[in-house]
Length: 369
Image (cartoon, rainbow, N blue to C red; front, side, top):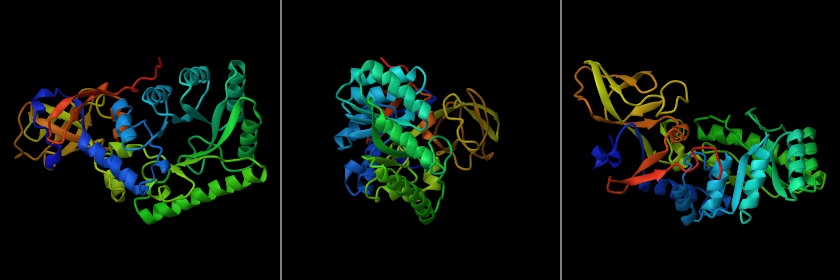
């Protein structure tokens, strides 16, 4: 195992636990800034990965002053920590409309923006904002191929954007594009896929311009497509996973240049056979997303993860592997983002490999104050 992950006082950390290596987090933040050639105005990182106030402060100290998030609790955390430019990349529906408007009123210094992709959502948000006498910046969520949310480029999209502009309580504020369907390992292929997304955005901009509608802001992409949009004029890039990174992105996108900065600490709780051990790392502590291998063991050679349950994870090992009950096992998760949401806090590891306490995963829950 790489010595940078070895924890000197690991005996003080109960397992299973999420551990975060702060020097590596700082390194990833600096690499993200270098990727945009030092122009932090192009960076709008997604807070959904870390959900942590202290990480926001680290990014703020590095000059990153605008963020993206998915939940109202994440948005509140950002506002509470002095972030004044906040995009909630989620369509507000049902009770969340008034919850959002209340949040906007409580934090008047924060410049909030939300997404819409349907006329009914525009009408509901406009009606609620009218009643409170507030004005809301609204971005149109475009679907460029993922088919999860958003509206395809076309006349319907123009009509929705126009209805935002015509509302007394809403202000049309641009386009949001998430292209999570782009999974090309090869960077050249990824660039080609991004160029297709950009062509759709340009077409949409032209259609809106023909109607005299302004597009103040364009926010695009996630971590895999970050290197492309980082170099694209007129676009803000919004990577999220980069701050902690993980095994999945490391293996699929080695060109990104980020380093896994968060691991899961586990221990051997049973040795049922000479070729099998059981860890205390069930799927309540490591994400069940994605299908297949959910994490890679770093400090046991040729270990093959097998059946996993709520509090147990069986692992097959060569028969001559020296193991003992209580032995620490370091696991790099395949997908770190949903892992973080399973833990109320994580243990901070400093540059010398010592645990220096815990940081709360502030926005793990969805309730707002």
